[in-house]
Length: 409
Image (cartoon, rainbow, N blue to C red; front, top):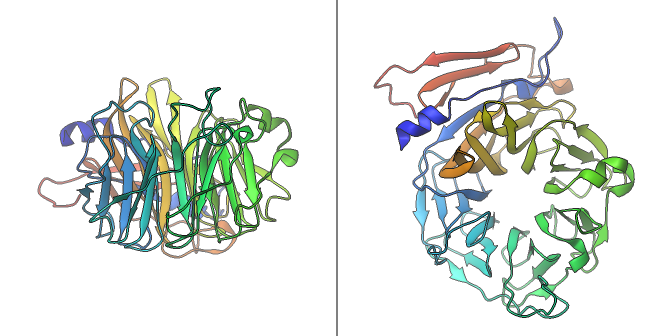
């Protein structure tokens, strides 16, 4: 299986902008992407790193994998989710994960999956969601025989968190899951992701069809949720299904969608700017470490096949650099530290996910001014993708073959 990984994930790096002669290169131009070995063959949907060493990824058939050495090695954990039903686009899967520190974390999924751990995943505890009724939860017209379909989770501390999902679902807890409060509305549609930079301020995004809202916001810990973002996005919003959201503080945030769109706000959603649009990419995940460094991931279809989309920025989204990864789809991305992010997804064969995929995205160690890399053009350190070392710069890609027995992975 590892041989197939090397063949299918021959990395195709393409740069989204070219610097004029003498110009300072965008920091993101020197970002590197590295494929990591994963001990499972299932699609991964969510990832969380509470610190640079500890990380957790979740996926189809109840799979949870964890690392304690910064992604060098991953081990599978027992989630307790029944793996027997075939996974189809997130059904019978763990789809979202959120850790507040290396020990305390939560994971959610479909159907009815709410899990928690207080020992770093050595044991996962199941939690029962509240019953679905005629006004709360997914709806088939009579409110009967339905199960919750959670897509994402975000905890601000070990006791306070929010779950989102199908049917305008928002469930909140302030007592570590002992009780859950319905904060949703079926008019919100299928909510995909949620982001709380602090306990009071949060945003959730989802599908704009058939619902009239694609983004909702709260400034009171979820007591009230209101539509957000439509005015400045204008005609763009009518064709947009938001899949991903990331806020680093109550004022600064980004959302991403299909058609390659990335929107940004620096005033808490009063105004939104289109930072990227009119591409064939569909973004499933977006994450920002701070006001400058960010990454968005998903997929795009080329004439030679489907490729994972990886776009990065080092200047807050003023410029984005794109690097497609052949034969793959990425579903989520998160930062583990100031210079390192991780994205998860799957390898694709004949448009079908066949094997887990985790990639490490590394930014330059020193950030320069004006979106630069700290002093003009430099050669980034090489990284290993499959069987080759690649160096990415604005001018293109240099491929160096690994000598057998080098021991690098």
